[in-house]
Amino acid sequence: MKYAFWNNKGGTGKTSLAFQAICRFAEKNPTKRVLVIDACPQANLSELFLGGLTNKGGLKLLQRQGLVPRCSLGGYFQLRLPSPYSPPAFQPNDFITNPHSLNALVPSNIELVCGDPLLELQSNAINTLSNTQIPGTDTWIAVLDWIRDFLVPIEKQYDRIFLDCNPSFSIYTQIALASVDRLILPVMADDSSKRAVQNALSLVYGLKLPSAIYNMYAFNTKLEKANRPLPKVHLIAKNRITQYMGPASAYAAVLSEIEADIKHLMKANPLLFTFKDIGHGTCEIRDFQTTGVVAFAKGSPFSRLSAGKQDIGGHRVQVKEEYRKECLKNITELAGKL
Image 1 (cartoon, rainbow, N blue to C red):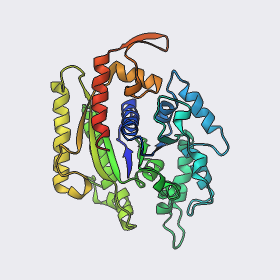
Image 2 (spheres, rainbow, N blue to C red):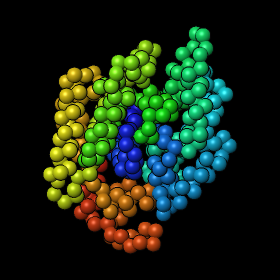
Image 3 (cartoon, one colour):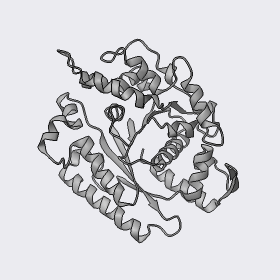
Image 4 (cartoon, one colour):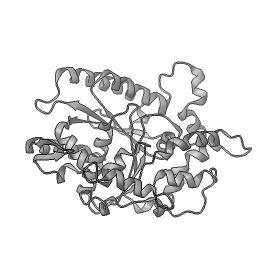
């Protein structure tokens, strides 16, 4: 089963959520093999898996990108640029890293295809290739299959495959979304996230487009024309809730509006969701606060994080054990739905 963490709004909250959820899934399922593909040019998720700020995750990421071949998704895409419409001979393992070997806090059953800023540089060329007219070849579909092609030789080796996607709907994001079965949509309790969820569903499923003319060029239209399945919404992770007293009233009001929108869409488009009851498809995640900041800096799952005073970048901060346990409880619930 392949999942994508994606929303149409930036921020490190989604990255931290993805990191903690994937690590917790791997911890709770030690016999299962997990592959993570970081399809975001910022590569924040990769830095976390490789050690975070305090364990030189950024430097280790640069070292992976400096290998020949370049050990990252950008390295694989670089291989595809001269051969965009049929996969060349390649070894997927050339582009895969075991992060546990570089960051012992990460479960050993996770493997990683690192993110790469090269994706942004490659996007114009990839767009051009996807729009080239070649008789008898659907060039857009051939390009959107790049990650599918990468997974064909190795997919059966993994029990779960997770992709972290850029908030933009650029061509590399579309390649990632076209390769997964299910979507996980993290949402924050603010009006911009409400709009982001609506935008995300419009981009993927063509819902509530401003004009029928957009249907001709929509992501869903082109995939359906090629008889390719669309990913289904599997989980909406509702974030930005107070750590102390449950949902604060202001946050709860926005989250309720988002939930009402989802219910309406479920009723009108039930086949776009893996769940029939909103309770099965949502999960409340309390604000990670200082606990999340420290875990992010250390590249540490909550289960491996120590409570007490910590030195982060020259600043003394304190992780309270009760908050760490609450974060772990929340992320365990989310991981149980993956």
